[in-house]
Length: 250
Image (cartoon, rainbow, N blue to C red; front, side, top):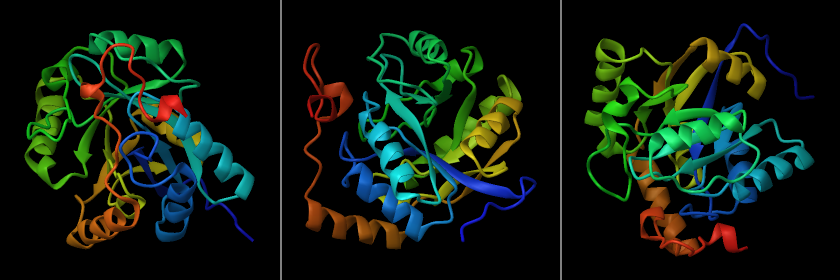
C-alpha cells in the first residue's frame, strides 16, 4: 500500500513542465503517468505557455488514477519583459505587457509567482526577466533551469539574487518538454504534499537540486519526436493578438 514518508523527510518537486497543450510532446495524461513511473518526484506543476488547461486535466487525471504524484496547476505566463511561472492558480491567465502585471494577476488568484530562467540569453523563444528579480515581488526564482544552455544563466541568477537582490527562495526545475527529462533539475522541500511544498516556498525552506538534461534524455527526446512529431504549437511570442494557442482552442 502506498504511504507517505515522514514530513521531516526532504522530497523532490519539479515545477516547470510542458505538455502538448503548448509546446510539449505528450498529453497531460501520458506526462503524469510517465513521471509517476520513471521518477521519484512527489509534486509536479504543469506550466504550459499561456494556458492552465493542460494542468487542470493532468491534476484531474492523476487524482482519478490514484497516482502517487500531486499536480499543481500552473502556467508559464508570457509578458513583454520575460516569462513568469504561475503556480497554484485556478484558471488560465492572459499575456501581459509587463512582468509586474503578471505577478499581480497571479497573486490575485492566490498563486505564487516565480521568475522563470531569469538570465537565459541563448534564444529558443525563452524570454527572461533579468534584473527585475531584484525589485519585483516574486515569491521565488528558478535558479537551476534544466536546459544545458542555462548553465551560465543559472550561476548569474544565484549571484544576482543572493548578493545584489532580494535573496528570494531558489528552486530547480527541468522545463521538460518530454516527461523523460522531468526531475533532472528539481526542488528540494521538506514534506510530501503540494501544501507542504507551498509552505516551504513561502518560508524559504527550499533549495535547487539535480542537473541539466543528460545525453540520455536528449536521445529519448529524439525518440519522442519520431513517435509524436515535432510540436506544432507556435511559440507564445509568435501568437498575434486575438489568435488562440493550440491548448486554448481544444
